[in-house]
Image (cartoon, rainbow, N blue to C red; front, side):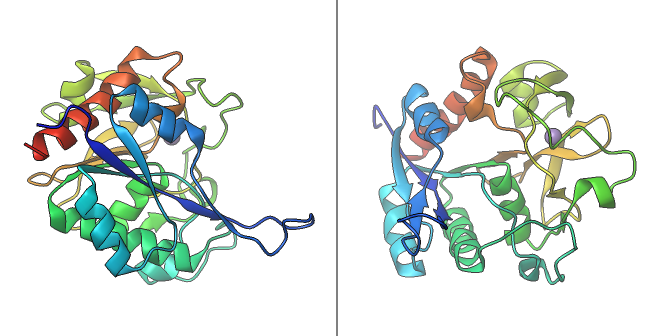
Length: 245
Ligand code: MN
C-alpha cells in the first residue's frame, strides 16, 4: 500500500482580460484543494483543464483517486438544455474535458470525490440534469449563494441514514458553507441523494456500488475551522489508498 496516494485534481481555465495577460489563458486550481489533499496525506497532482481523452487516461492511471473540483457553471447543452437567462458563464471545452475525466475515472473504479461543480458534473456524466439557477427555478430555496467568508457556515445539511457521508460525520446533520447557485435536479442513473438542505436542495450524492462521494459545499475551504471536514478529505484519501493496495 502506498503511504501517500496520488490525488488528481481537475482544474479550470482562467481568461484574464483588460491587462497585459490578455490572450494568455491559464489552467488554475484553487489553492484550498491542493492544501486540503496535502492535509489529508495525499499527494496533489493537477490535471490540465483541457486534457484530451488520451492524456486523461494516462493521468488517471498515475493517480489513486480523483478530486473533481469546483468552478464555473456548466454548459447546459451537456444535459440537452438551452441556457437559462440566469445561467452563468461557462467554458464548453473545459466542461467536455472535465466530463471525460469523470467518465474515465468512473471506468477505472478509483476513488472519486466531487466538490460543488464536481458533484454536478458527476450527475451529468450519469445522464442527470441541473437547476441552472436555484433562486429562479426552486421555489422557497435560498441561502446557497452567499457565503461572505469562505469558511463560514451558512446552512444546515441533513444526512441520510445508512449512507457513506453519514458514517463519515457520525451524525444526522452538519453545518456547511455554500457558494453555488446551481444544483442537481433530475438524478443520474444510480445516483442517490445522501444529504439535503432544509429547502430540499441536494447537498451530497453517492453512487452505490461505485467509489464515489460528492458534496455541494466546500469542505476544502473549511479545514481551518472544522476538523470534521478534514475527516471527509481523509476518508477520500483512504479510499484512494485502499484502491492502490
Ligand atoms: Mn448549499
